[in-house]
Length: 530
Image 1 (cartoon, one colour):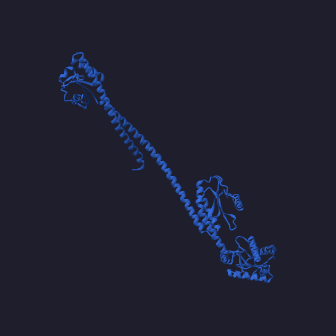
Image 2: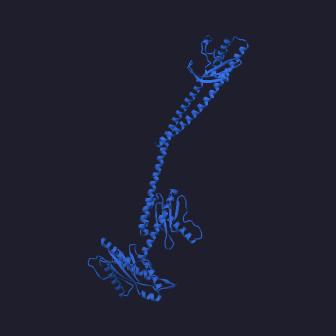
Image 3: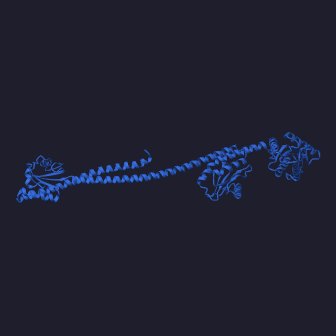
């Protein structure tokens, strides 16, 4: 049975059960009450008829005719049948039978109500009357002083009609109630169906949205775990976060090795540089006043941030902003659920980035090491060959650096190396690759750079380094100079080994020419167009 059928049938069954039980109970009590009332009425009439007969006897009125007159008068007044019977069972008078036909009536001594009355002075019987063709109730009273039996009788149709009327009333109520229940049931089924469909659609939309969120989070986590650098992570976050948190803008800030808060990635139209500046300033304020409680952002309906925590350590901040849409509890809960996975993935990326930097960078200068340079050399050389472009190699050596270390010590020499690396970072392009080749020797790869541009760059670096003054332990150190050897692909070779050898020869020539100069290798290739 379907639910909508149960909604209608079950109330009807309950209602019918209640109505039937009520009807049976009411009929039972009503029948008893009506019977008692009927018996009381018959008893009253019989007693009155008996007293009237006794009065007539005392007044010496003609007995038979007086009884007939009394019977008919009382019957007319009470709408009942009055019968006077002698103790031997002869009918003396009957309100329903003419006086002349009384003698023809049967002896009533065997009538049950009469025989009971003779024994106990009162008898009452319910039975069917063959004469009247009705269900009747007979009540007989015997008076031993007057030697008379008065029998009163009435049809039971009166209270049967009352019971039947109640039955029809109940049937009408039941029928009306069933109609009402069916109508309201149909309406309720319609409303329930509509509510169920709405709830189902809402739940389906929530499931779809939740599934989409889980899929995006899993995709983002997988991609972040596969990323090697924070730059790769920034691109991934820029693509996925707007889909995961639509209509919201935001940014992720991460702590670096110096405990400075830096913006790793941001997305959305509502994100502005001023917001990042304020967040960093609040972090600085908290860092400077570590004993005071400062919030890292100002939470509001349009601004929400969560700390990125990994293994109990603070690693950064995820901040969301919106100029129009309120950041409600749904977005806040989603963000809080996202933070653990995001924190773990970003921590892994930082670790991988740190390990990678340790593997490819010189720890003192921060420049790439020789191993990375040799790997990168093949890539940039292949790119230059594929694009039919030039590649410049600058081999650089600090002049008389051994004497410098002997004079000032290796720590002072490290300061000079750090200064040289810093000048390289400031004066080179992003695509240029600078590495510490070994000791005080450096190598720089410059894609898309010809002889003239390479020589200009070498001279620029040489002059910048020569102008720098390094202070160590409050002492001004001697200025250092550079010797630079330059080779160009394809003019001076087609392989990395050949180009490095030619640059190294040019560096040797620069030292022979008195150092503090830049020299291009003297090998010439006929097809070179300078």
